[in-house]
Length: 301
Image (tube, rainbow, N blue to C red; front, side, top):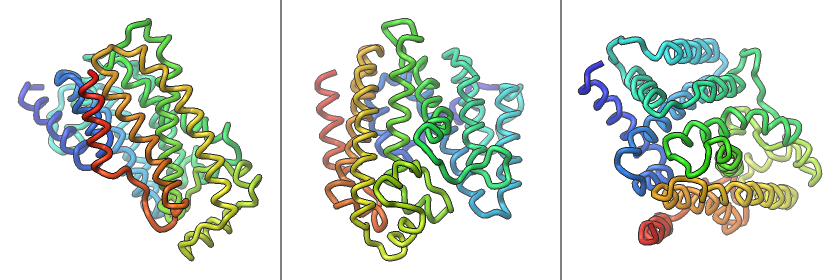
């Protein structure tokens, strides 16, 4: 590959991160400039796969989406050989394969990620649209979220052997993912999915029929409020496990990861502030708060 092709590939990844990952992109601006392209490449790869999976919600698209994931895995396993990058997808693969080589990221984290993504595609042998327990959901999140934390770890760097930092990195990825699930309940229901554990919901008298009723009426039933309050407490406990691991990272990257953790956990505050109105609005940290948190961490860096 030429340096011009690679530069174009990383520029595409930066654009995707800026367009789709506001909190994520803001946090990456606190990183040293040489680390940012790799982080953008990892984000763009995950986003590309996620978009393919979301497209599979229509059953008629499921077989096509599964084939796309197979192709992506095949090309990434071959590290793209030296084929020209002609499309945005090809350029994302070019950038992420360069990132894998450059930072010696274990390829296993990408295969585990893709396996979890296959769990979202109707017709796939791994397909699941419901999770009976938190343990079952964590099996999914091992690939969908923890693996992404482990992909990022070699890019960010550590002050301890990397294996010592891995549990906290995996937990932070899981914390971010559970926050997404709590924020995106309505969106996921519209796609025929429910990423909250059935047994934890049932303890508060919540089932799929009640969630669908809340989605239809736009009103959050008191039983759902109680269940969400419980799951937010569970989510915050995962953040408490993960955040001390930030001190195991290279000092220069800590402000960026603290910013991401603060802002992502802030989504939980927004859900509470709106009285759990997750069926009519998508909770988001206000821009002025995002900028304030980033500025504070930058000043402390």
